[in-house]
Length: 128
Image (cartoon, rainbow, N blue to C red; front, side, top):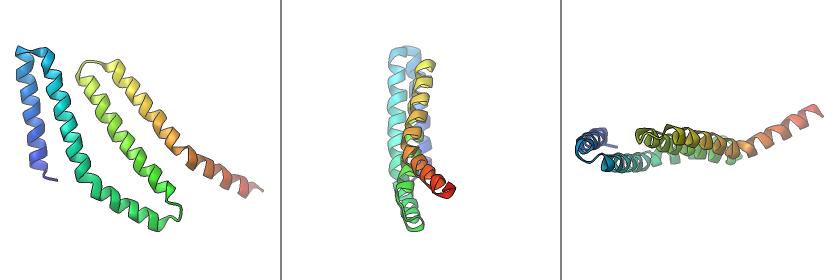
C-alpha cells in the first residue's frame, strides 16, 4: 500500500469537496462519499494479504477455525460500520450515524453467538 498516494487522494478529495461546497454545496457530499468509498476499497485491497496470513496462523493454532472466521468478520464489520458512520456524520446526519454504529454492534454480537454457545457448553461440562 502506497501511503503517500492514499493520503494524497484523501487530501485532494477534501480540497475538492471544500471548493465545491462554496459553489454547489449539494454536490460536495458526493465528492466526500466517493472519495471515502475509493479509499476504503484501496485500504481493503491492501489489507487482504494480512487478513489471509492472520487467518492462516489462527487456523494452525486453533483446531476450530470458526474462531478465526468470527474474528475476521467482526473486524470487517467494525471497519465498514465506522466508514459508513463517518460518512453520515460528514453529511450532517449524526442520528443516522449513531444508528449505523448501533447496528454494527448488534451485528458483532450476532457473529459472536456461536462462540458464546461453545463457551457455555464448555462451562456446563466443567460444572458436571
